[in-house]
Length: 81
Image (cartoon, rainbow, N blue to C red):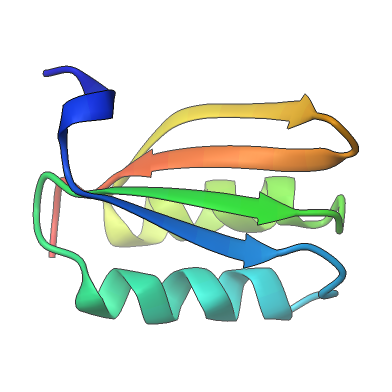
């Protein structure tokens, strides 16, 4: 499955501190369907362990997590509701 061709939601949490980015992710997740992709942008470095814990707890997949242009970009695939 090509990530670029599936429904994609961008969650821009730049400037928000913990727990803001994870709260924003959880809100997007509530609207997502299995197979959707959520891309989270954040500037708080705490988002890395928070997203790992969230993915483990919910059973969803982290496709990538990287630094890009002063932000942390996390791409998640919804595999479980």
